[in-house]
Length: 112
Image 1: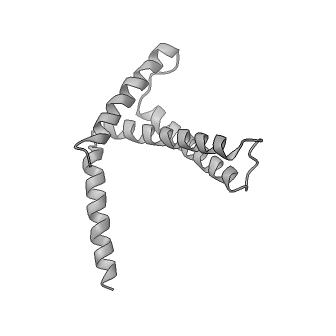
Image 2: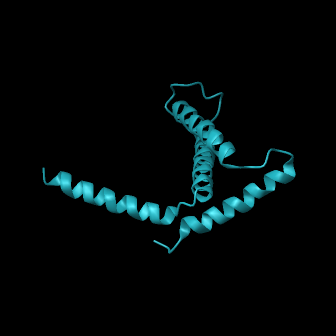
C-alpha cells in the first residue's frame, strides 16, 4: 500500500471543493458535507435498486447506471474524506487500524 494515498486524495478533494466558492454556492464546510453525505448515500441506494430492477431505471442502460454508481460512490468518498480532514482524522492510519482490528476479530472468531 502506498505511504499516504488517502492524504494525497484528500488534498485533491480540498482543491476541487475550494472551487465551489467561485461557483456562487455556499462555502463548503463540515455541515454541508454531512448533509451531502446523507444525500449521496441515498443516491447510491437508488442506483443499486435500479441495477437490481427494483426501481425504475428511467431507460438507462447498465453501463450508464454503473457510471452513475461510480460517480455517486466517489461523492460518498469525497464527503467522508472532507469530514475526516476537517476533524483532524488521519484516514490512512484509520484504514490501517481497521484492517488490523478486522484481522484480529477474524482470528479470534476462527478459534470459536
